[in-house]
Structures are given as structure tokens and as C-alpha cells.
Length: 441
Image (cartoon, rainbow, N blue to C red; front, top):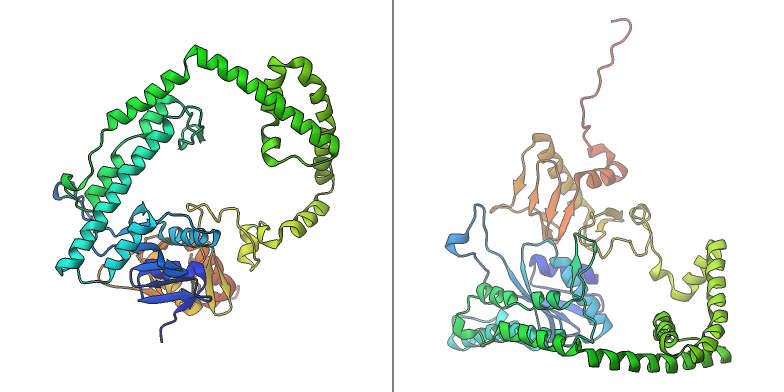
């Protein structure tokens, strides 16, 4: 009988592999049926693999092209646990050659209703077309919502990460305008094979002009002067509140702590006579904070014990070597999808650092197959032939013996390290063994 109960991360991996029709976690909170994976109940689908795949247009197809699955993900927030389930789903999809599209719960639920039905019937074909139109409509509304948010210069916006400077993009008018494009809308329309009539009307240039108009009003000299005056007055009031808390021995809120430097600067700029006595009272607060930092620096072991008791062992960070040795904790690279995949043995099971589990005997067969590919220098790719490893299957083994299976990319050196430790008798020497010649010969 096929195994159907897995840890949460394994449930997501088995669903992404589509190697069986059903599966669930031990408590039943995360489960899948066919193409849809759910959190807690069927009214909350997390993701759906659409029945039809995407193929590039004939003129854009390159050598070796293949159909791509389209996955629609539910990004409507509900609870911390459901958010964690969605993280497991994203992790299982990472590295796969799928097209992933974010959508609301209602749209994902509409696709989930169609996923297991006969799309040849008129009713379900119409329902599937309605779900596609709803998805592209959401993309248009999201573009308008971004433009409305960017048209508020008083609001700080995160505009993404700049790999060239290793920092976030500057929050400027030009960068905000550059992010308001219809590229996402056109991408969804192309992937879902929608006609222009299925896309709601929109005007990108009008959205850009709304941002420019907001910045023109925001940078008016009279408004700038009024804002500075109001900010200084508000900062003085905030400083009074903080000084009162310090006098009573109360702790400052996180918001007060994070804004303290800005509060002091603005208050001293316009109201120095009133703000200076209050600032002097804050020195005691800073002194206590520095003493706490000094204690942690001089007594690191005691500080770690206190932190472990306060936050629990779940937050304990471990090294890759400790994880490979069987320790439990958070790897520094656990949220870095590009970090190398680690493997370890736990009884009769092989565990990966991405949360997947397979029988150890299957992992041994995969290692032997990868070793043969490395020895012969011939790569292998699934093309009508499958190599099953537990609930998954290998997608590719390159000439160096490195394996790709779904979201996992496992280096041959990592597999060989574990094989030398657990099953050294199957490891073949990399180089010819030297021939020993006796002195008598």
C-alpha cells in the first residue's frame, strides 16, 4: 500500500512531484488530493497545478523546449500555521521548471473546483474560462493598487533588492513609476492563452501620471514647511512621553525605541530649550542598554543559556556539520533556496535539509546510479524512462554525478560523503589503486 502520511514538508514535496493521488500530514492539517493541496479544509486551497500546461509560441521555441506546468498559489493570509504551509509549498516548487502565479483564495478555489473535472463538458469549460479571467482581472487590480500605494509619497515603500549594490532600491519617484508596468498582466494572459477581450481595460500612462501629480503636490514649498513644523511638535510630545516612562522605570515600546533617534533630532531642531532637559533624562536609559550589551559580550555562554530559556530550542541555530550529525535546529541557510542541499541518515530514512524524506535503500540506488554516470562521463535525463526514489523521481544526473530531483539539487560530493560514512563498501575508488610490488619480485 502506498504511504500517505508524511511530515508537512514531505507532503508538499510529494504533491509537487504528483507521484500519487493523495497524501496528508500526521495531524491532517496539510493534505492534497490530485492537483490541489489544502490547509486544514477544502475551502482553503493553498495551490493548484492547472490541467493544461504552457508551451511557448512556435516562433519562440528553442532547442530542447518542453511544456511547463502552471501553478496558482493562494496568497491570501489567514493564520501563522497556514502561512507556514504555504512556505512549505513554495519550497517544494522552488527549482522546478514551473510557472508560478499568485492569486486570491477565491480564484484558487475556483481553479481547484475545475482541476479534477471533465473540461470537455460545456459547464466546466466555462467555469475554467471564468477562473482564468478572474486571475487576469486580479493582476490588473493589483497593478492599480500598487500605483495607488506609490501615489502616496508620505508612505515608505520597499521597491525590491538591487543585486549590483547589494542593497534595496532607493524609494524615489522614478523607481516607483518604473515598477508600475503591465508586464505581469501580459505574462498571465500569455500563459493562460487569453485574448485581449478577456483582459479588463487599463491605462498605464494614467497610473504613472497619478504618481507624478502626487509628488508635485508633496514637494510644494508651503507643504514642506508645514510638515516640518508639525513633525517637530509631534516629536516634542513623543519625547515627553518617553521621558515620563523612563522616570517611572517602564520599558519603551519597540516603536518608541526604533524612532528615538529621529524623535530627538527633530525635537532639538525646533524646540531645543524644552527638549534638552528631556534628552538628558534619556542618558540613563542608554546606559542600562549598554550594560546589557556588555554583559552579553563578557559572558557569552550565560547569555546563550538565557536566550535559549527565553525563546526555546527551536530558535537555536546550528551549523551544517551539526545538522549532518543529526542535531535539530535552524540552519542559517534554511530560507536560502540557492544554498546547497545537505543529506543525512535517520534510521531507515534519508533526510534532506529541504525537508524531504525517502527510504535509505532508494537513496543508495540513486547514489550508485549517479556514480555510474560519473564513471562513464555520460549525463542522464528523464525522457520516457523514470528512476523512482521514494515518492519522487530523478529529473537529471549530469556527467559529474550531480542529481536534480524536483526542487533538490544534490552534489555528488555530498552523496559520497554520506555513502563513505554509512555504506563504505559500495563506494568505488576515484583513482586506480597503486600496485604493490614485493621486494622479492
